[in-house]
Length: 457
Image (cartoon, rainbow, N blue to C red; front, side, top):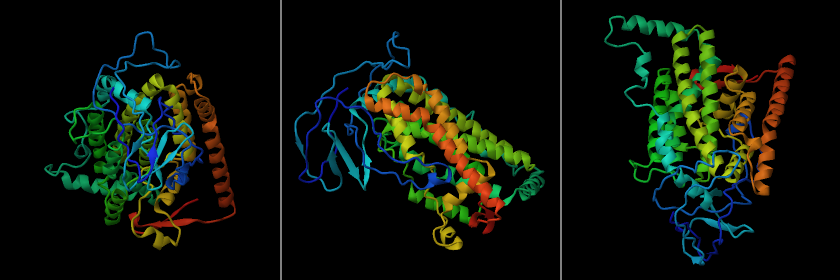
């Protein structure tokens, strides 16, 4: 793989590239967040290690590993092409980023106070070497549009003579849904509708973005196909509609999201593995509660969305499994980095333009929505801990052989992390029950449901 240095260096800053690749780590000491705290990412953006991105060319070659390298616990070296390391001193004039130096002389680019392009040269090699695997395996997780369900499959047919009767039945069933359930349902829909931000996130990744908008790269095909499938989810739930909901969706898309991925595909694929499983849990619990409230059609809608999320989760966890196979140290440190930051939910910037003023200064729409979801049992801090535990077991983290001391520290952190989050969940539950026993009341009004009040305890 031919390499070229194309990062930006601020005015009067001279950078010396290292003479050998450094680990793909991006780990740094940042506090973990869980449950409703996940909406406000306050982690530090100062990194203590890792190489800067050195962008690769689009040359492709076979990615199949040698037959003798099948064990996940052993680092596997995929086939490698020629690598040209830029070792001369560079002096380039630009205005935007700030660059600092680590002890290993690895440049760290900071833009708007955040680390960007943190993928190590080794990480870029691995992503390129996985092109063949992505083409042969990853794309099989997508379904063609001719066989996918569509939102109209679940709604009354306007051409049917029974159309009005079926619409009245939908209204009758919806009228029985509790207000707190509707808040969570609408919050889920708003999250799904912010899809442009998620596709944009994928297209910022080094080594696997869609360079042209219609690239034939397997990574680009996956990004577009995944986006197209996810697009149906918001359409289906959007049949429960309000002006404030639409305003929230527009605002969320305009605000974007910031899960602290640093243009790093390692970090992104850990994030999406976690997020798809979390979303699957949320939609499955929403389906369960719809059944409990007698709305069988809504239960089917939420259930089939959960099934899609399960398939997407399988795809993203498979990608990370390949990263562990080819680059165990880099994958281990990326996993730990995302867990230390905390997985920020995609709708953490949601705002309807009313919630803060309507509920008093300091009220946050996402935090209150997440609290209602936790209280209702749709997605809880314990669910967060279970996802951590599931991924640790899925990727066989305790048994992966790592080389560097930093990767070993990350491994030790990950093995114990789920129990830390569970202890936090237990404390939150105890506090909530204590407040209920003492007769405390904490409520919030939501414009999504015509400003009706919902308990946050």
